Each structure stands twice: as structure tokens, then as C-alpha cells.
Amino acid sequence: MAMNLAAAGGGGEEQVVAAINTTPLVDVMLVLLIIFLITIPVANFSVPVELPKRSNALRESTPKDVVISVDAQGGTFWFDARIAGRDDLQQRLKRIAAQTPQPEVHIRGDARGDYAPVGRILLACQRAGILKVGFITEPPPRG
Image 1: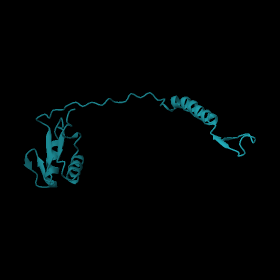
Image 2 (image 1 turned 180 degrees about the vertical axis):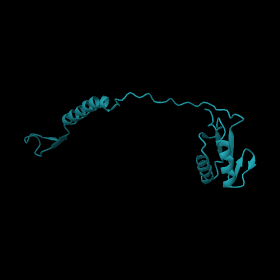
Image 3 (image 1 turned 120 degrees about the horizontal axis):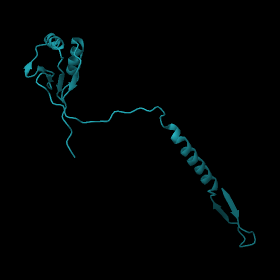
Image 4 (image 1 turned 90 degrees about the vertical axis):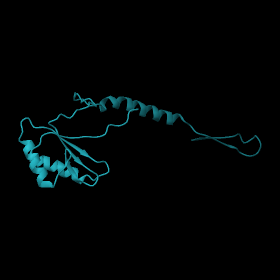
């Protein structure tokens, strides 16, 4: 900051004129700009990797795919039939896992329900040896 004092002969009182010297500020900003311009190309990744493209392809369920539904109260359904318990689900999934080729298991979970019943289905699929598990969701509205 620089201060200029007015001449003592003009008016009897000394007046202080305060002015900010912006030259150092501009110098610092230009140096920072140059540093950023030099370091930005270095920040790019040097390993060439082709990343997967996002796709929103519709998949149709085939008749051999198994659809397991979970309602808002946690009830589990094999297609439209209610499953009695975990053991019944486990036995059905083991029979499906033994088939060649193995059908996919599609899980439909109610949005208002808890995650725990869906987690139990995933655990049962893992224990039975199911290789392909998918979730059926509602597509977002267009526009």
C-alpha cells in the first residue's frame, strides 16, 4: 500500500491519499495462472484405458428366467406363488442352479419395502450357486 502526502504549503493541513498498488497482486495472479497451465496436462492419466460406455439397453425376460418378487411387507414370491420360507427358496434355487444353461434370476423389490428380504434372496442365490442375478427396476420418465 502506498500513501502520498500532499505538499505542506497548500492549505495548512496535511491530507493523506491512500491508493492500493495492484501491481504485486497482478504479478502473483499471472504466476499462478502459468503454474496451473503447466501442471494441468501432467494431471491427466498416462495409462491408456478404454472405459466402458454407458448404455441403457432394454432386456426382455425370457420364459426360462426366474422372477422373484418382494412386496412392501417383505413377502417373497416365486413368479406369482408365495414362497413359504427360506428353506423353500433355497431348494428351488438349487434346482435352478443345476440346470444347463442356468437361467437368470430377476429380483423385483417394492420401493417402499425394506432391503433385508432382497438381501436374503441374494444370499440364497449365492449359496445355491446362481451365476446371473439381476434387478428389475422402473425406468425413469422421459424428458
